[in-house]
Image 1 (cartoon, rainbow, N blue to C red):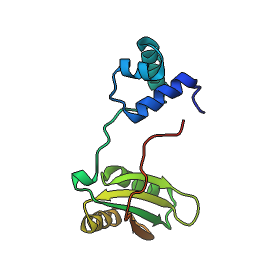
Image 2: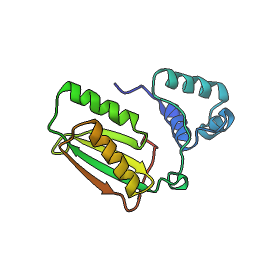
Image 3: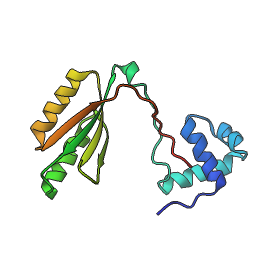
Length: 153
């Protein structure tokens, strides 16, 4: 169920999504409010799970992680034990930035960030050694056109 947010809540979230390192004074000024109501609203949105956490966004290429692969996975296994093991393996792999279970011909899609193709192959070999997979297709992203963590409010 969607949280009940008013216009001021949405303004605060918009400011936080752009730069959560701002002081309460800066956030309050940006949304046209004072510090205490802004603090109370942020606290409430944390408690209700609207704000999950605050984190730093890093430049993957600056850290040498130049290759981004989208990995399409098809499986012939649909038992609970297989799925549990597959999810454990994915969660343990730091290269996997995102994993989604899909409707349609492809069962899962992963977003994997690594140094290069050789590093992807190392990831791939480890993945298939830990869990049985029917078919894997890896697509190398040639250019990141848009990437954001900002949700439309």
